[in-house]
Image 1 (cartoon, rainbow, N blue to C red):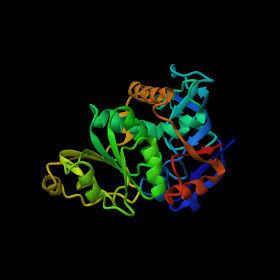
Image 2: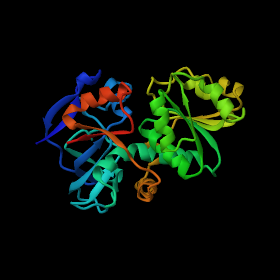
Image 3: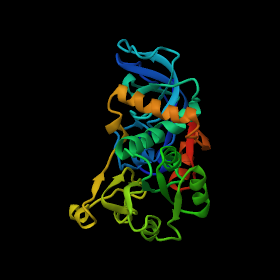
Length: 325
C-alpha cells in the first residue's frame, strides 16, 4: 500500500483526498517510480476544477515528478531498477508516493540534477524549451513580451531569454515581482497593476511592438496581448490562469496586422521519447551551465497539497513549488 492525493469529484482544493491505494504492477511498457519530489503546476488545478476532465473518477492528480525506478515492465529496455528519472507529461497520478507511467514519458536524470530541482523544473523548463527554442526560433536581439514573468514558467523564461540574447519584457503584478523578474534577467518589466501594458510596450519598442507575445494568463490578457503583437507577429497562448479564452474572432487577427496565433501544449512537442529526452537534455544543459537556476520558494508535504494549490491560485507563490512525499 501507498499514499496518494486523489479526487472523486470536481471542485475547489477541498475535494483533494489523502488516501491509501495500491498501485498496479507495471504493464509491459510501463515503469513504476517511487517519487522523491513532485511538481506543483496550474494545470493540476484545471483537472481538479473540471476545466480539464480526468478520464475517470476517482482520479490521481499531478503530472510532474522525479524519483527512482522501482519496477519495470517486460518490454522496457531503456530503464532499469534503481535508475534516477524524471517526468512531466503524465498520466495523472504524480501526487503519490508511487506512480506507474509509460516508459516513453520518462527521461534519465543526470547525477548533477537533484530530485527536488528536477521536480521543480521539468514541466516549466520543458515548456520554456519549446516556447523559446522551438516556437520562437530566435536569432538574438528580438524583444518579446512574456506575461507572469515572476511566476514558475516566467522565472525560467527570464533567464533562458537572457541566455540566448533575447530581450524579454515581463508583466508582473507588484513592484516586488518586478524586481524579481529583473534580477532573473528580464530586460524590462511592466507592472500591470499600475501601468498600461500596451502603452508601455509601444514605448519600450519604439512603436514596433513585439514579434512574439507569450500569454499564460488567458481570458484577462487576451485582448492586451493581441494589441502588443507586431504586424505578422505571433501570439502564443499557452495557459488559462484567469480562465480560458473563448469566442475568438479570426477577423480580429487581420485587423490587428495579419497576426498568427498558436495554442501549444507540451505533449504536442514532446511527442516521442527521443524528442522528449533531447528537450530535457537541453534543459539540463542550461541548469548545469548555471545559465538557468531553479528557485524552489515553497515546499509542502504531499498530504498538504490543498494548501499548496490554494497558495498557487491565490498568487501567493513565487518561483517553483514542490510537494514532498
